[in-house]
Image 1 (tube, rainbow, N blue to C red):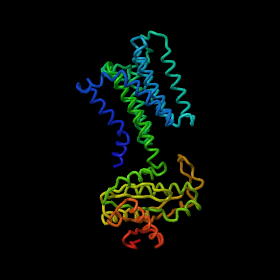
Image 2 (tube, one colour):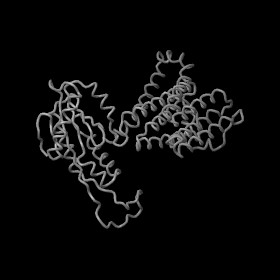
Image 3 (cartoon, rainbow, N blue to C red):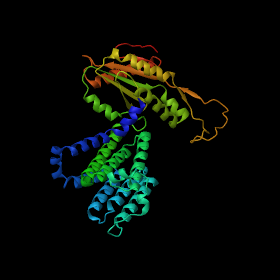
Image 4 (cartoon, rainbow, N blue to C red):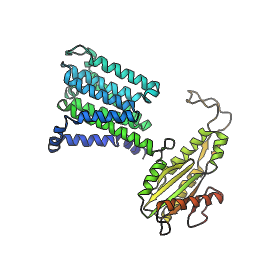
Length: 401
C-alpha cells in the first residue's frame, strides 16, 4: 500500500501528462494538428508559465522555464556540431540544482541555486563560436557506445540526466514535493527532446506545460490541503459538501482535552498529537474521507453511505487512537540520532490521546449537508458531555465508550 502511494506521488499527474503527450506526438493524425501550433505554443507556454510562477512566488519554476527557453533558442542560433552535447549536459545540471534549491529568495539555498543556474547558463551561451569539440571528459566511456549514439548526447550528459533523475525521484518519494516532481518530469521530457533530435521544440514545450501543471498542483495544494496534517482542508470540505447528494454520513471528531496538551506540553507537542490523530483518521475504512475541520477538530465524510454502515469504521478509528500511546520527546533528546545512544535514565513519558465523535446522516429531516453537519456537531457535544472518548449519533443519545 505504501509503495503504491509512493509510486502515485511520483507519477501523478505530470507523469501521466507526459505519457499522453508522447502518444499524441507519435500519432500522425494528431501530429498534423499540432505542427501548425508549434510556432505559437512554445512562446505561449513560456509567457503563461512565467507569469504564474511570479504570481505564486515559485522561483524554481520560473528559472526552469527560462532555462528551457534559452536552451531551445541556443540549439537554433548557436553554431557548431558540439552545441547539442554541451546544452544537453548543462540543462540536467540546471534542473538538478533547482530541485535542491527550495524556498526562492527567502532561503539561502534558493538564492544559491539561482546564482549557480544563472552563471552556468551565461557561461554556456556566451562561449566563443563555433563550438565543434568538447573537452575529453564529456566523452569519457561511462555508458555503452550504442546508447550514446542512439541518444545523441555525450556520455557526461547521459550521466547528468541519470544522476539528476535518480536524485529527484528520491526527493519526491521522501517529501512529496510537487515542484520537484514537476522538475523531474520536465527533465524526462527534455531528455526525449535531445533523443529525438528533429522534435526538440515539441518535447521542450511539453516540458514547459508539465512545469505549469506542477505549479497549478502546488497552488491547489496550498489552498485545499492542510499543511500540518496533510489532510484536505476546511475549504476542500466546504466545496465537497456543496456537491453532496443523499445518502451520506458526516462524522465530526474532536481531540479530547486538547487545550490541556498545549498548555502543559507546548504547541509542538500539540501539533504532533494532531498529526498522529490525522494519520489514524486518514486510514478510516468504508471509503470515508477525512478533513481538517479547524483547530483540534476533524471531519469524516462517507459518500453514498448510511450511518449504520459507517459506525464500525468510526469505532475502529476511535479505538485505534485510544490504544495508541504518544511518546513525549525528552527535553535533552538530540535532534539527530547519535552514532552511540546515550544510556537511558528514565523511560519516556507516554500520553494517552482520545477523541470524541459525533455522527449524523442525511434524511428527510436533514436533507442538506449543512443540516447534517450541524446535527453531527450537536451529537459531538453530547459525546463530550457524556464523558468523552465515545461515539454519539444524532438519533441515539449514547454509544459505547
